[in-house]
Image (cartoon, rainbow, N blue to C red; front, top):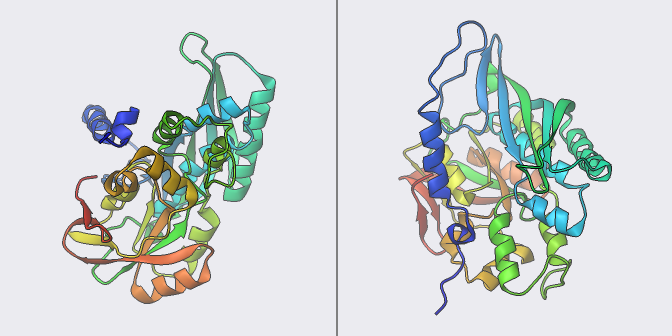
Length: 339
């Protein structure tokens, strides 16, 4: 029997990535003097900076190999939305409101049409996030870059008494998910390799998918800013989780000493089931690589969670918090214990 695809087999080993991050971070020990010190707290989705009555937040991320899909299709006007989304969706995980953004575009040769279309997506993402793009950089690097890379950094803010760190999660809380728009901008290396190995190009149709393979993969990442900020203004919330690279393992960023049980996961959309089917991917592997339709999770007291689930688009209660440790995908009895 042929071994199924894994993210590592596709070229992205998330455990080795974590090790590489740790080796870098251990070298970063300098502490500035004066106003604006970083808050020392592990596993937050965005960094907190002490700034008087508020915390400023910073998050940085890029679009990744989704850009290879855009390049093959010649469609560049949506990837700016992904760039914004990957940053603002992390920013809101600490309860912060995105405020300002700078982009960084590395390109092998200047191309007015490409950069214009990237700008269209960036502007749309900024509007959806109620955030200004205050600057950026286009670097022409023909000896280093083959194509285009797009990334950015988001500045946000949150009142100190409204920060959400995940440390308030407790037994009896429920887990609410806000649905994803698709694969978002994580796991594209695996998705592309699976379709390619099965003989499907980005411009091809594939049974079970409404659009061509490339258009399915290019669907912009859902931006959760307005919904999550509205939820925070109305409900008690103990934890916020952006389900990005690492899939359900992202929930391990929440308070330790508890078990986060996904007992009623949403039914994955066709693009997820097709990737799993064509790639022979195990449930354990695919739920720690892709969002599987659960793009953003909210951990809240039971009453609040039920109200959130009934009040917001694509929201559903998918799990509970109990004594124990790790993240348990109850269907299949799959336990994740390491972030």
